[in-house]
Image (cartoon, rainbow, N blue to C red; front, top):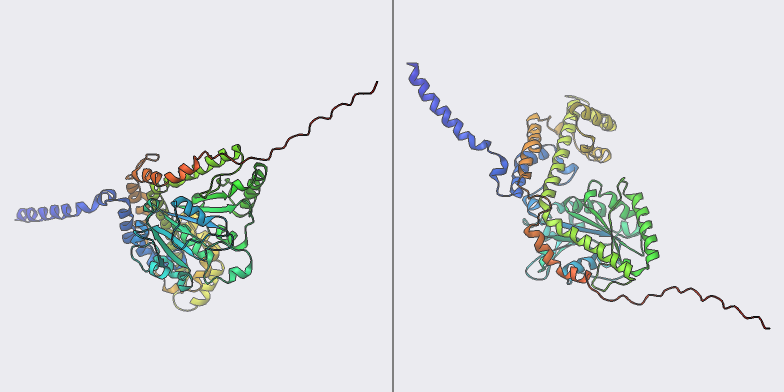
Length: 460
């Protein structure tokens, strides 16, 4: 009598097992592209944990699909009149809507230079609410910033592949900094976290780094691999002064960017005028400008790898954040004295960071900034946070250990010439033609030693 029962149950179990088999297929085989895989992983396994522990209020805002689908972004930073807008015009080969160039501080807003079928400008509030634009996170800065943000659309071959961000010149002095209606440093940090390349432009005649520029550079911490330093207008000085200027620039950067590695500095003059200077300096400028163009050509090719890299950094930070909040929640009393207990925990937050580090073997580099974490947590009630969800943490670790490596297997080998790379090269042909131009340099004033004194003949 028992045999028919087993014969009926066994096929059902087999069918149930077969119905579950497709769910165990590798993640990389399910998605059509790397961006689609990253979006699905973020929505299903990462964002729920971020929302539970309010990650977006402590660090960067929650990500949307437009953040994964966005084109590579190049951010330009520098003090006023160092040639940021001229550099963009140099790459595009033409003016863009809203561009103003002059020796005085002309660009007074952030401008996202994007591709469009016709020349037009879009206000910042409209960009921030557009579902297909990667600027939804800028709503956190309010109307004070959005009124100083706009998009410039034009039909340029280069903008099919990248988006250029022009920024207002960093001013010196407390008066100008107080006059801003938004936090310039925080906005720069937001764009830096989403940019593929960050260009710091310096003028050969203005090497001083103001307080606001120093704060903006320090806000780029954690994105050192994206930073490229450009010494612009270098053909306006002679060779001897250029060597001194280069040394002074490296000395100034060493006091702000505290890394043991030396920053890569590109020297040149990035505008549509012929290069000036001696033959030796012209050859130097051409090689340096060519190296920078090669670096910019590789931006679209490395965009997928950068998105994975940024998501991995975000997942590591979210995991450390969940462990910290879960530990602090565990230390809180159950009924009375919650407010005093939270103040005591935040006063000794460094010790609790160390406990979490030892208990879960988390790398020190994954932990957030102590002062910033304390300042944000003071505005929250720890009792309203959930307890540590070990299953969600295990799912995030599975994403890091297995699912993202499967997506990485879809990337082409480093160094192969992709379609986007060649397309960017064709979009920059006018720049390469300008670099290879053989315009003769102007006549240089050379030092000629005085003739030797003639010996006077003695009279007989």
